[in-house]
Figure (cartoon, rainbow, N blue to C red):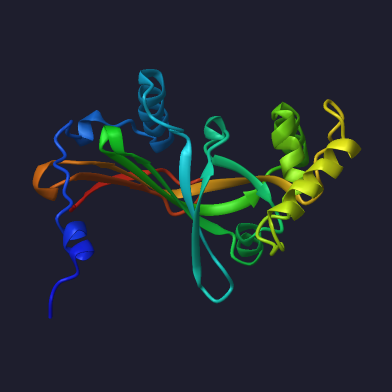
Length: 222
């Protein structure tokens, strides 16, 4: 049987990672501090498109997983990772019945990856309101316009709804929707990955048995 040219091309794709190494002695005692150090280094250097983008993985009541990209919007000073979303979306429905999640930050230009696992809680209304009011007008209207994950007939339906809501809520007078708000991923495990040649990557995993327990850091085989 002849090999599919597209599959062959995919199999031949390779990247040699040799930007840097990572030693346990280089790591902070707290994984949040270590994340902040990497995140600051990357954002200050610029050149990375949306460094706060993170893949969010959730699962429904039957354990069927779903993943999508969302944006980190705070919480590090509270020891958590915050994002905001429509509570009726697929992710919101999953988290309502299974309040656990995984996060992945991939910074390809830096040959780095951070993986987070933990429990998820809704943010207090005060935090949601404060963040919503800081958003640009178009993003505020967008939260109202999109019934996220709901089926719609066509693009015109979305555009018409957007126009009606702009008439209803002029700029400076957009309330936060009741169906929209923030979530905090409270980590129980955070892994730092630095690419190395020959796929012998450096991997370190911080873990704790509970949200108030001390962190333990171990090196993992790549």
